[in-house]
Length: 326
Image 1 (cartoon, rainbow, N blue to C red):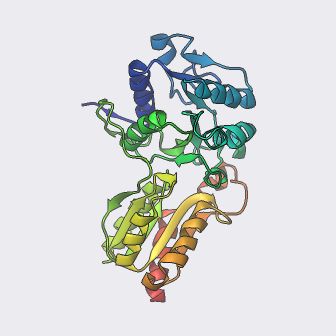
Image 2: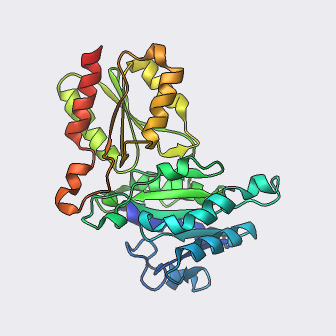
Image 3: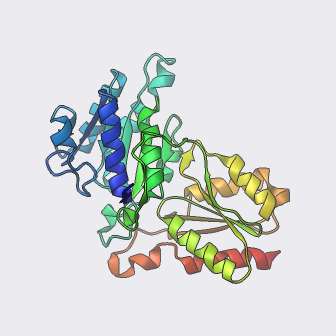
């Protein structure tokens, strides 16, 4: 079994589902001839033809609207926004139509669509190409928000997203697109949506994260272990609907929690998790919940970019503060 990168896992999942379901189509800017700006759709147009892999005009609003229309009429479109910062013009169609049609029609019309977007910073790109704005979508009822953190989870979660009868925002951390490889069987087996993945068991502190920050969080757990501190690491994976039970069970065991995410701190999705811990797990907490996040600024250009992103050192320091507080 060949080892593949996260970006190759995305391509593999798209190819598998297109081969097994003729209602699946891919559309977006440069997804056909060029194979996408990051080559996530490379080779798909040659294999499945121009009617199923559609190069669109440079018009995100139209891409989103066409995607809603296709899905409402029985297709399973997978639309690409070249960068998550380009998704803002799509939001009217996503929030006002895709997320509402099931409710608006009392289940008569559903929108089995996926919007893929390369997400986050760390690739030395301008700020509009380095957005981490998943929190803007977690507040919209009717949407699933999914973010893989490894090749295997990218493959399994994308298959599940395409098969889901409702709209899914699928954010791909581009910093780890080609960072490492792992074995991913091309067997069409989807991973479950709406569940967190416990990547490492621990007893002293719970580290909750998603996307590219899983890497730094696991590194922090290793560093803490070297000092005799046992950290449990949870990859949220599906932000909404949130599998809060898994997080709560971990905090009941450890008594401490550090939430790590790249988006700005204020009103980031970590604030929702922290609020629910305060509401539902107050008597289990031995210390205040810590958040290690991006800052309340636009992500800076590449010279300062890595200073903005949550680092292993910042996660370790936050975990130690929770231990010191108790």
